[in-house]
Length: 349
Ligand SMILES: [Zn+2]
Image (tube, rainbow, N blue to C red; front, top):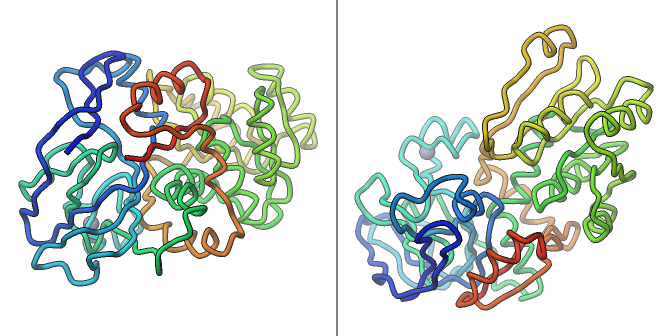
């Protein structure tokens, strides 16, 4: 089959790789219907995280089950499934505690799983899925093709935005500011709005992204950043700031923006993958009683809650995709995201 391999900085190739094989009993092989490029894939692409050796890449996909191992109980051949950005069994204590991203038996795509098989990367024609019964979520029936972008967003960005909102304690009547207008930031706007926030501010300077943020329920847009951004936000919320701030970037600047925008006693939910290692200013948190909660999103625990709302059209998180390419043009997909010509690129084999 063909799949995406990252060979080094700015070197992405769609090339021949070994076909997946069922190997551990509880696994399944899925024919990928749609995949995409994640902002976090760009860390390796840009050389921020060095690539020591060529490796498979891609961790978001939806597809159709083509075969299942002998021990698979609930997933059936022909099912249309959503995969989270990691595999998990959904039976261990961490999965049952709602943190399937810390599954005791799980792992990540594009590498060996903990059972000795190989979990293919998501940006390819087929993927062998470990722990198929735990990892995969079945979409009832065969979905209308129009829903595929939104179903794919449940693999990562929509559920990650939701995790930011849940971590920050967003609920009815809360005031919320979202730092970051990438696919996760926009999804966080949608998640906060869906959870009943009274006011949701999107911090964005891009007109197209501002439009989506408004469609997703943003009540206000703030273009200022750094000190000017903090001053503007405080002015909007009684001079003190909002109840909740959702940090969806992962840089030192974005975390600083989030912490200084929050009101005393408020909560920052963070889901931006840390790059360069933002440090928490403990005295500032102490004297302002600001909480910080979040991390790698346990998306598998959220998919079933959000799926019905995608299928009945109440939410349309697939709007974050603004470019679609055939998978053999995956190198162009990375370039378009690197050059910010696209927010998020959907790939079809
Ligand atoms: Zn588990």
